[in-house]
Image (cartoon, rainbow, N blue to C red):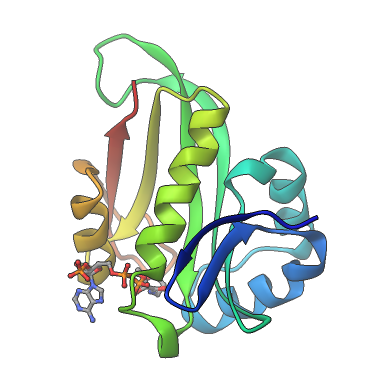
Length: 165
Ligand SMILES: CC(C)(COP(=O)(O)OP(=O)(O)OC[C@H]1O[C@@H](n2cnc3c(N)ncnc32)[C@H](O)[C@@H]1OP(=O)(O)O)[C@@H](O)C(=O)NCCC(=O)NCCS
């Protein structure tokens, strides 16, 4: 049975199910230059369903967030080895942007990695993506470093992270 995590107006935020994946893949194709194999989407859903979330308006999937859990050096503590949530991808269809759906997806993604007892959460974002950077800052993410030519087209990324401990 589907369980609703929260509502944003007429938009339902809920955990992703296998039947949603093709719609998630379509949104990824239409909103972002970074694409992945179908297998990758499937494996993230299998590995971390708690932090693979979709936004749905009247049975149409309009947004998603998907995350991974990793172990590695802390973005906040010197020499600390921690469990980290990694936001692999987040997007909302253009027609539905600016309504608070991205914020709600991120809040539930954070809850999902917290269920798995992550100490931190981090992501990479294009330095030119001011909308996304603004949203992450509002949600408490801090720019920790600039990754030179991170993207295939040569653009740099900001590595942004939030302490959850
Ligand atoms: C980034 C993205 C997920 C945000 O989703 P959204 O549903 O539009 O976000 P929200 O409506 O919750 O807005 C959150 C904040 O983003 C910022 N924002 C949203 N739309 C904006 C716009 N048109 N211009 C500037 N800032 C904007 C604002 O700070 C906003 O907070 P506010 O409403 O309190 O002012 C969405 O723009 C998107 O899918 N973009 C294309 C894919 C992408 O870039 N993904 C991120 C890759 S790292």
